[in-house]
Image (cartoon, rainbow, N blue to C red):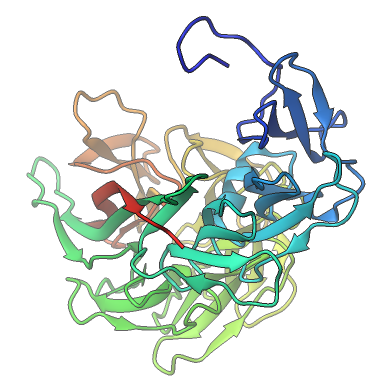
Length: 482
């Protein structure tokens, strides 16, 4: 720590914790860290004066902390409660799985009564939405909390009394609001961050040998989030996920982005994303999030009737079809770490394919080999394994989850490890026949993110991807907040 007036830094304690909160009297800092077993997350109080670290409560008390991820926490101004937002996590032994769980959503707010700086009872749940929580704050009288949530569809600020018995109420005019903070003395002011993200679907023609590629252009756009574009097998349609209706739903459009129409209508009860077309183009597999789990579904393109293929208290995602249409591959952490599984397309028991890790898989045109990645896009590498399981072999070092696609003659992927002077990234091709990698184009303005999207037509002529086109943030203030 360091004095607000400047001076030398002073280490309080050795910890890897990154979430902190000041106690009301300013004498302690609350941190979230592993206990001595390295298995449970525990709150500690660290003395600002001495650096002494003590448990805030016994690790055997609140069951909600066992295997859960805590995102935000804050002491009440009167010191009688601790407020925190948390949700189900992936297995704690795998750091990559922790990142996966954060993207899965499913956060709620809990209130932990304190007595003498120790919690001796279970936390009480204040919300039951299992939605994303992005910041929370106490009112000065310690009677209410203000928090950012997607419970209404898009992020905004809400308030709820800690006494319970009332539903949270939206604070008018706070759409796209995050990270609230409230002053402690009159006049009471509420500040928050207002952020706008706009991601759209872009398209580019992949050049033939020695030809110049066509200019990239947006083909599916709105003022909200468009992602997960996937060409149909014949290349005439695109399935994608969008929040333009207020909830993440699946949509369909022509190959040029024309005539977008909704495919799902969960209306906030669950989300839809990660579409994958069946070989005959009549069905789409997708993942749907309803915390604490995410499962695989299949929907009929014409009738809009859908069915659920998995029902596990874990995270299943990134489905893809076998070329014969009999199986659907997906990544799941049901075994403790993320592995590739496959389930009969008509329903049935899932089978585990990989043993050394797996997150996203694609089958070759002959149906004999499965290519896959092991983690989300921040971790590179593509492997291969026989479609029924077997030896797992590394193939391409620089492939990232969500930024690759299997076509008829090979694998197209974006190389984020290439050292280029600009933000452009090479589009490369791995040939099944020659096993060689060549560069076939360049994509500008693409960022490496966990929410990746990329698709190529099977003939290797067109590529589409999700691109961040607008990102704005402002600090907002509500004076005389009541």
